[in-house]
Length: 305
Image (cartoon, rainbow, N blue to C red; front, side, top):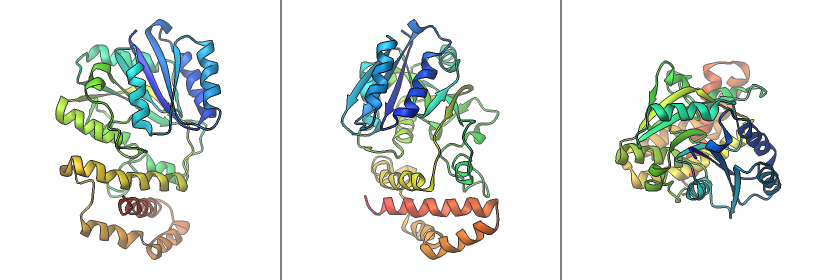
């Protein structure tokens, strides 16, 4: 078996069903891949949905753990994987029919253990993109700096290689032997840079080369709200300390002066002014408002480690 797709999931039974359906419709022969669903303690119909696919398709397997976070869920999936290549996606990804074929082709061109493949993640066409969602996926919207950096694919235009900052586990594949040596750090209990930490560790310790295949396309089917952004940035603020203690050279915990600067434009009064201007204008002011709001939530997480 060549490929094991590992999907951590938590309370998203509806979209998980679509995710799995897209995977069983791949143009790669079924004998060449398997799908491993790791349920991170869901309380909805995740188990029922997954088991329906398990009973109907012998190349899908399901595992359950108590709620411990994506990192531990992925590690559990790796332990049971039979494929020599691990493909990582999230449970809200709907992939194209040639998705696995594209990942496999790139690995055949780059067979080294340290060679990793990044695919392209796009918003699902059926989603109506909001200004917040546009900001989150544009890494250089204001003065080349104030993008949301959930994804920053525009920086890879015309390129075939990327660095550890693009270690996006929503659409990534790597050799199982590499993950056996360098698993995800279980210290990250929730979302927040566990992927970037592993990408940096692989670069530093294993000489990782990250190759970008823009034809390995997955569609992100998740409508994002300000409340979701708040949770994400809060968790990133808390996770910054974990990375800082391991790799202080990355500067993930801002200096006191920089934290004060963030506070100046993200306190309640500043945000109220920015919100008022945002409602009257579009473009950079709107993007800067979301940038300021994200820094407020980041600081809250940073100060509640």
